[in-house]
Image 1 (cartoon, rainbow, N blue to C red):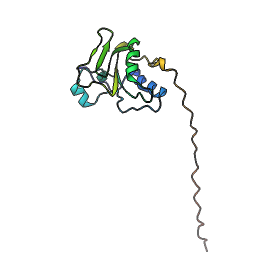
Image 2: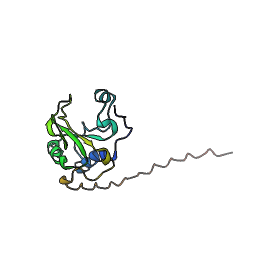
Image 3: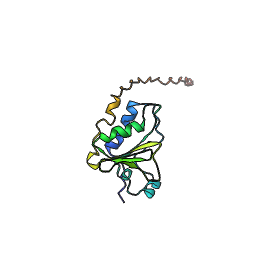
Length: 155
């Protein structure tokens, strides 16, 4: 069993942050980094346990189409293997049917090579550069001053 990390690696975190920067209103229901206890029990050797994996929610309506991303990330040298829609791919074995219990139809699983754990370069370069978010200026409304009650006059 792989040891369970307390934090996801910078590369895994970058997958989700960069996807959100590109498509801020994307769905995130199946996003994931670190495993739950149930996941650890089901798959004690998962790359999620080491922080070297990210699950990216499939949301083609907003622009996060994991079938396209699955194909494009095959060229990324950081990728150890990918799982999506009943298929698994690795450079060593190519693409084939995935026989695990979770067919990964709601998200793309991206496993990252250990030597690339700190590489936060763009994961989705073909999708363009994220637009900078507009700066929001906070309005601070001062608290109303308390009305002073006149003290009783001394006689």
